[in-house]
Amino acid sequence: MSTDLQKYSTENQLETIRRYAEQRGFEIIKVFEDSGRSGLRIDGRDGLQLLVREVQSGSADFQAILVYDVSRWGRFQDADEGAYYEYLCSRAGIRVHYCGEQFDNDGTIGSVLLKNVKRVMAGEYSRELSVKVFAGQCRLVENGFRQGGPAGYGLRRLLIDERRNPKGELGRGDRKSLQTDRAQRTGNIERLRTSLDAGFDPSNSDKRKVHRQ
Image 1 (cartoon, helix red, strand yellow):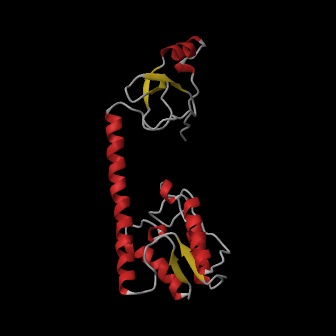
Image 2 (cartoon, helix red, strand yellow; image 1 turned 60 degrees about the vertical axis):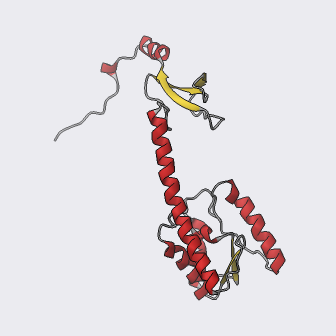
Image 3 (cartoon, rainbow, N blue to C red; image 1 turned 135 degrees about the vertical axis):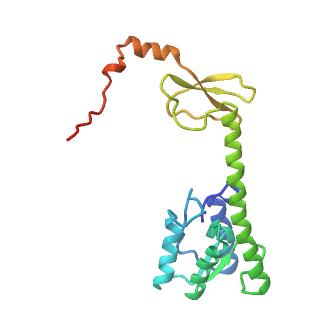
């Protein structure tokens, strides 16, 4: 299991898998989960890596693997990668069941075709989402909105609503509570003056000394 939007939250996935197991007489003895991990690569997905290791080593103490849907292996850009991990399980004599799909993973022509289509769709969804997110971030930057990270020296993060009305200053570690709100960088002259009045002298700032030999 992995997380991917509210629809695919791990809690919802596990509930669907449990219902599937109860209806077919399976007993769930172990859960492999990758919460909050990207499905583009297997790197960093400890749950999937552990599953593959147990299957390949022959130490797996289960006879079936229950997966929410085909895309839960990952939204790999190469659709064959997801098929490869399922093949490893099948070769070890462990059948894979897709609990949230509308077809049985029984090896028929229709099942094989649907799985391949869904794997390609999963990778394509990831590519399209990446393009849309990048375009949205570019548009927000062009409109003068801050995209993450702390404000620079002498600046502050000003929270504004969808009509660009100021709502207040965001301190260190503060986050906006509404998705329609934006953070905008603005000058912080008063705080800058306070620092200068306190005796800040750029010429006496701590600098790393470089010794030449």
